[in-house]
Length: 159
Image 1: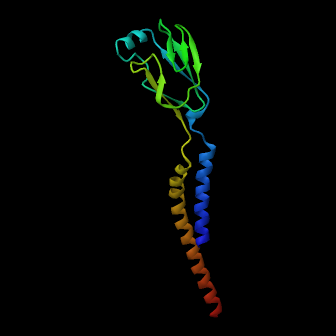
Image 2 (image 1 turned 45 degrees about the vertical axis):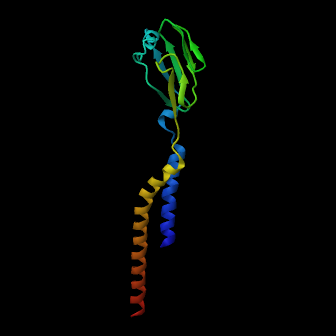
Image 3 (image 1 turned 135 degrees about the horizontal axis):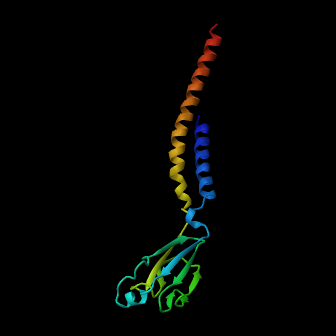
Protein backbone atom coordinates (compact mmCIF):
# COMPACT_ATOMS: atom_id res chain seq x y z
CA UNK A 1 0.00 0.00 0.00
CA UNK A 2 2.76 2.47 0.84
CA UNK A 3 4.45 1.85 -2.51
CA UNK A 4 1.22 2.73 -4.33
CA UNK A 5 0.83 5.91 -2.28
CA UNK A 6 4.44 6.94 -2.93
CA UNK A 7 4.02 6.25 -6.66
CA UNK A 8 0.86 8.37 -6.82
CA UNK A 9 2.59 11.25 -5.01
CA UNK A 10 5.62 10.97 -7.32
CA UNK A 11 3.39 10.89 -10.40
CA UNK A 12 1.48 13.96 -9.19
CA UNK A 13 4.68 15.90 -8.62
CA UNK A 14 6.02 14.72 -11.99
CA UNK A 15 2.91 16.05 -13.74
CA UNK A 16 3.21 19.35 -11.91
CA UNK A 17 6.91 19.58 -12.77
CA UNK A 18 6.24 18.80 -16.44
CA UNK A 19 3.59 21.52 -16.55
CA UNK A 20 6.08 23.97 -15.01
CA UNK A 21 8.86 23.02 -17.44
CA UNK A 22 6.81 23.04 -20.62
CA UNK A 23 4.75 26.17 -20.26
CA UNK A 24 6.34 29.59 -20.18
CA UNK A 25 4.46 32.58 -18.89
CA UNK A 26 2.47 33.96 -21.82
CA UNK A 27 4.23 37.31 -21.49
CA UNK A 28 7.67 35.65 -21.75
CA UNK A 29 7.37 35.33 -25.50
CA UNK A 30 9.50 37.62 -27.62
CA UNK A 31 7.10 40.41 -28.43
CA UNK A 32 7.55 44.13 -28.69
CA UNK A 33 5.75 46.50 -26.32
CA UNK A 34 5.24 50.06 -27.51
CA UNK A 35 6.01 52.95 -25.19
CA UNK A 36 4.76 56.18 -26.75
CA UNK A 37 6.17 59.44 -25.39
CA UNK A 38 3.41 61.96 -26.17
CA UNK A 39 3.94 65.59 -27.10
CA UNK A 40 4.28 67.78 -24.01
CA UNK A 41 6.09 65.17 -21.92
CA UNK A 42 9.22 67.32 -21.43
CA UNK A 43 7.09 70.30 -20.32
CA UNK A 44 5.14 68.17 -17.82
CA UNK A 45 8.36 66.69 -16.38
CA UNK A 46 9.88 70.19 -16.09
CA UNK A 47 6.83 71.26 -14.04
CA UNK A 48 7.24 68.14 -11.86
CA UNK A 49 3.98 66.65 -13.08
CA UNK A 50 3.57 63.10 -14.32
CA UNK A 51 3.37 63.15 -18.10
CA UNK A 52 0.12 61.99 -19.68
CA UNK A 53 -0.15 58.34 -20.70
CA UNK A 54 3.31 57.33 -19.43
CA UNK A 55 3.21 54.25 -17.17
CA UNK A 56 4.85 54.29 -13.72
CA UNK A 57 6.78 51.12 -14.58
CA UNK A 58 7.25 48.64 -17.40
CA UNK A 59 6.60 44.91 -17.11
CA UNK A 60 7.53 42.89 -20.16
CA UNK A 61 8.29 39.29 -21.03
CA UNK A 62 11.81 38.20 -20.27
CA UNK A 63 12.46 37.86 -24.02
CA UNK A 64 10.58 41.04 -24.88
CA UNK A 65 11.60 44.37 -26.27
CA UNK A 66 10.30 47.90 -25.92
CA UNK A 67 9.78 50.15 -28.91
CA UNK A 68 10.06 53.73 -27.66
CA UNK A 69 8.26 56.18 -29.96
CA UNK A 70 9.05 59.82 -29.22
CA UNK A 71 6.22 62.15 -30.28
CA UNK A 72 7.61 65.00 -28.17
CA UNK A 73 9.58 67.95 -29.55
CA UNK A 74 12.74 67.21 -27.53
CA UNK A 75 15.00 64.13 -27.39
CA UNK A 76 14.35 61.78 -24.48
CA UNK A 77 16.76 59.43 -22.76
CA UNK A 78 15.82 55.98 -21.45
CA UNK A 79 18.72 54.08 -19.98
CA UNK A 80 21.62 54.25 -22.42
CA UNK A 81 19.38 55.17 -25.37
CA UNK A 82 18.46 58.64 -26.59
CA UNK A 83 15.38 58.83 -28.79
CA UNK A 84 15.22 61.93 -31.01
CA UNK A 85 11.96 63.87 -31.57
CA UNK A 86 9.76 61.99 -34.02
CA UNK A 87 12.07 58.98 -33.80
CA UNK A 88 11.88 55.55 -32.30
CA UNK A 89 14.23 53.01 -30.80
CA UNK A 90 13.91 49.34 -29.94
CA UNK A 91 15.31 48.59 -26.50
CA UNK A 92 15.98 45.20 -24.93
CA UNK A 93 15.92 46.14 -21.26
CA UNK A 94 17.35 44.30 -18.30
CA UNK A 95 15.46 43.72 -15.06
CA UNK A 96 16.15 46.70 -12.83
CA UNK A 97 14.44 46.94 -9.48
CA UNK A 98 15.83 50.40 -8.85
CA UNK A 99 14.81 51.57 -12.33
CA UNK A 100 16.50 52.90 -15.42
CA UNK A 101 17.44 56.55 -15.72
CA UNK A 102 15.06 58.39 -18.02
CA UNK A 103 13.79 61.85 -18.91
CA UNK A 104 10.12 60.88 -19.23
CA UNK A 105 9.21 60.78 -15.53
CA UNK A 106 9.55 63.48 -12.86
CA UNK A 107 11.55 61.09 -10.65
CA UNK A 108 14.09 60.52 -13.43
CA UNK A 109 13.78 56.74 -13.20
CA UNK A 110 11.42 54.08 -14.48
CA UNK A 111 11.34 50.59 -12.94
CA UNK A 112 11.51 47.78 -15.50
CA UNK A 113 10.35 44.30 -14.52
CA UNK A 114 10.81 41.17 -16.60
CA UNK A 115 8.38 38.29 -16.18
CA UNK A 116 10.16 35.21 -14.96
CA UNK A 117 9.28 31.58 -14.77
CA UNK A 118 8.03 30.85 -11.26
CA UNK A 119 10.46 28.98 -8.99
CA UNK A 120 10.41 25.19 -9.01
CA UNK A 121 9.01 25.26 -5.48
CA UNK A 122 5.75 26.48 -7.03
CA UNK A 123 5.20 22.88 -8.18
CA UNK A 124 4.89 21.58 -4.61
CA UNK A 125 1.42 22.95 -3.84
CA UNK A 126 -0.26 21.64 -7.02
CA UNK A 127 1.45 18.28 -6.49
CA UNK A 128 0.15 18.15 -2.92
CA UNK A 129 -3.36 19.23 -3.95
CA UNK A 130 -3.45 16.54 -6.62
CA UNK A 131 -1.32 13.89 -4.97
CA UNK A 132 -2.58 13.71 -1.39
CA UNK A 133 -6.26 13.05 -2.17
CA UNK A 134 -5.26 10.67 -4.97
CA UNK A 135 -2.86 8.84 -2.64
CA UNK A 136 -5.58 8.47 0.02
CA UNK A 137 -8.00 7.08 -2.57
CA UNK A 138 -5.40 4.67 -3.98
CA UNK A 139 -4.46 3.62 -0.45
CA UNK A 140 -8.11 2.91 0.40
CA UNK A 141 -8.60 0.95 -2.82
CA UNK A 142 -5.51 -1.17 -2.11
CA UNK A 143 -6.69 -1.73 1.49
CA UNK A 144 -10.19 -2.79 0.39
CA UNK A 145 -8.85 -5.06 -2.36
CA UNK A 146 -6.50 -6.77 0.12
CA UNK A 147 -9.40 -7.30 2.55
CA UNK A 148 -11.56 -8.73 -0.23
CA UNK A 149 -8.69 -10.95 -1.37
CA UNK A 150 -8.04 -12.12 2.21
CA UNK A 151 -11.76 -12.83 2.66
CA UNK A 152 -11.88 -14.79 -0.61
CA UNK A 153 -8.88 -16.90 0.42
CA UNK A 154 -10.51 -17.62 3.81
CA UNK A 155 -13.75 -18.76 2.21
CA UNK A 156 -11.88 -21.02 -0.25
CA UNK A 157 -10.12 -22.89 2.60
CA UNK A 158 -13.34 -23.21 4.61
CA UNK A 159 -15.07 -25.49 2.05
